[in-house]
Image (cartoon, rainbow, N blue to C red; front, side):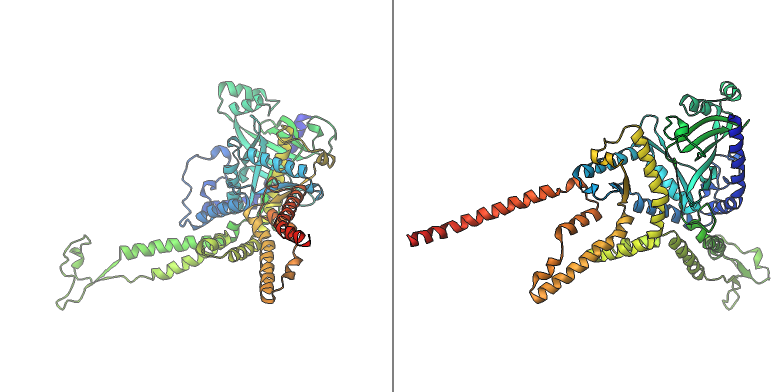
Length: 539
């Protein structure tokens, strides 16, 4: 039975390998010119890859490689900035979010998420950057979220060359096959850690006699056709997890996941395609042209710096010297006219202009030019900054939306599942427990704020118009249209102000009542002398 499962998994894996042959040719072409450290990795087996070999022979210009790094940095800083909390957990029921205990629980749960996500052993920051690199170069990236053996979370950006995907009827990636290589020593370590259960005698023998011997392994995660709801073992989980040793088609272990452990994101997809298309694919024509232009410019620049000499065939070639300070007799005639000339070359300025055109296209595709607006024009008013941010949010909204739904949403769901199983989240308040902990995610990254900045910008424009009207007409009644409490609570929400920083409705009512009482007392104190004078006059 176990070997039958292994055979089916290997058969399906071979089918998925055949389906993506064209993609591998495309990815290899991009790697050669944009991400050379991935060059030759899609066509060569893992065992034949030489570590540390030079792979930049096909790169003559680094513009695309630099633009890719900036693209990854921009995506990270705008979607998942390290120096701020870029999302919040909220109750699905908006009525519940008005309860103070529910607000504070979601704030504490969000704090826990970020604390374990950015813990040193979690390795999120480096792996997050790798996923954005893969997204910009190949259009598809994958993050594996696992439990850290010492508790908490652990992240691994899985190389695209090892991953094979399938989608469900709704177009969502729900199946992953990952093929990787372990040494015999690593296989035994994984078994000791509880990851593998049924290791073959061949592996055990190799671990004793040749621990560096390599074995190919396939990890398959896919929805179970049938699973027993309510079961406490792996077969009670909706996703099956299978580790298969390719040598001998042997099932190393069978497990399961309550939540899909791979967060797969795609930049854009074509009709009927599973894998994504990337900015590098869109910029590939410009990248190729720029490489050829750079080669031409190198040749032309060499001719300018070390020019070709034209001479008359009258014997002076024998005495012609190109050394600095040399005297060449016969280089001019008796009238002083030169007999030695340089071969005319083309215009380097024209070549540079052509190259700059291609570089501009590449930087546009990788979103580099878009994010230089605020850097190039720092002296702007607050309103101008909001307008620029709004425009930027409109341009990046499709990119952001896809990454939030395909990558960040599944990642957060998997993180919460792992932390909940490890009892690393605070206990649910009763009201939220009755709602079975239903939650949503609100993104507070700079890119999300750029989209929501339109609300704040609209409020500022409306307020400015109302103040101008009140100043002109001397009638402040127009300001009665605004619900100040509701406006400023929404502004606090847009600006991601923590719930614990705000007073609840009861505290606000108490403060206002106290101020009212103080005002009335002050009025009574101020009116006391006048009242005493009136009483005296009446007496």
